[in-house]
Length: 416
Ligand SMILES: Cc1cc2nc3c(=O)[nH]c(=O)nc-3n(C[C@H](O)[C@H](O)[C@H](O)COP(=O)(O)OP(=O)(O)OC[C@H]3O[C@@H](n4cnc5c(N)ncnc54)[C@H](O)[C@@H]3O)c2cc1C
Image 1: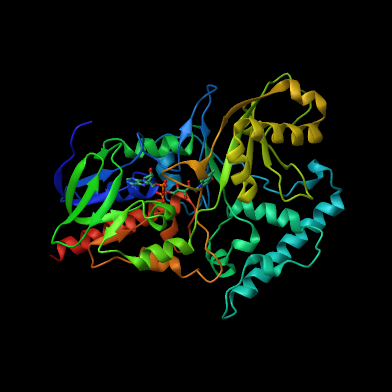
Image 2: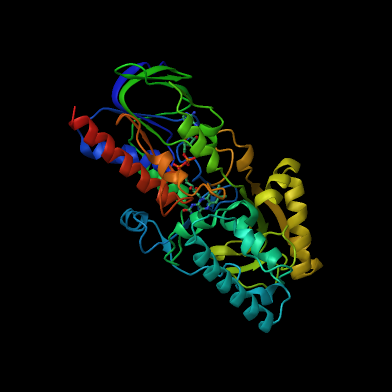
């Protein structure tokens, strides 16, 4: 691995969605030298497409959320990616999990009522956890908690109401046939990215900023930090002088845990619809959500979150598969067992350069996103999904935050 020692106008730490967004914007400006320092041996970070069975699987981000407002939708279309617009039926079709049509309607009404009380509660001066809004002993409390573990990566007792309602969701969700990770890999082509170059220290005492990397020291006039909050709160990247307000903000915005298990489902298994969404259980917090034959593929995508996912990550892929196989047997009958086999599983909490899936705010910490995103001395800029005020936890939020940070870095350079 060659030594990277060099001096650039702008160094970007991390080549995930935010780092790619930032580097592309800096590249478009044309007038500045740029180097992106990435710890992994690949770009994309928490957006990563693999193909273990001949069709693409997104280990991380899969959906273009708020697709009608998502800047990556037109970019993907212009690049010739196939955009699938079929809306997902997330946690709506409970009849597929053994509930009656009436019970399903009651669940949907409860969910809508929860949403209204979350919005009301967010307007109060004091923040509180989402769990405080549950009806004591409510019939759907376990499923509401499981849904939070999928949506927020954490159970309701961990999540700030104020932050939760700041998330903007247009309700339109699209997918790319080739994979979201493939889009970011394409967007990173030609960018000046140094792989396997983890940054351990940002020394901003002098006139130029010095970055210590595993491949030598890089100096830069401006730095854009796009690493996950876990890397800042865990001080895997250290600042000198220290930035306690950033460490505190990152600690208030921990990464939740969400994982995916991909299972093959051979086409000989009869009787299940294609592109079907369903939940494993409507009465247990520890359950998975399933997409069966998504995009007509011979597969089941299983999604799990929160403490449950953290526990199964520790136990390993075989335990994940065994849990899913049990639930699928309850849903589809014993016959399904002969037709399924594990394909791949993620372990984002144990991934050393992610340490989780996406950020949520602890109760009382909704304003930490603005603290995290604020520049330091007009020389150190911060981006990444956790810095987004309204699209946090998403790939497009990360991408847009990278562009914002790049524009701020460019403006500060031209003011020199
Ligand atoms: C299971 C799962 C499902 C998801 N589903 C969706 C979805 O459907 N739609 C959606 O929009 N979003 C989804 N997300 C969230 C989305 O993937 C993230 O919000 C987004 O990709 C974060 O981008 P980022 O650039 O902020 O961070 P990252 O992607 O984490 O990028 C940061 C980069 O910094 C690197 N890095 C870390 N430490 C160092 C260091 N010390 N030195 C140098 N480099 C370092 C990392 O390797 C990484 O490449 C999902 C995530 C997961 C895990």
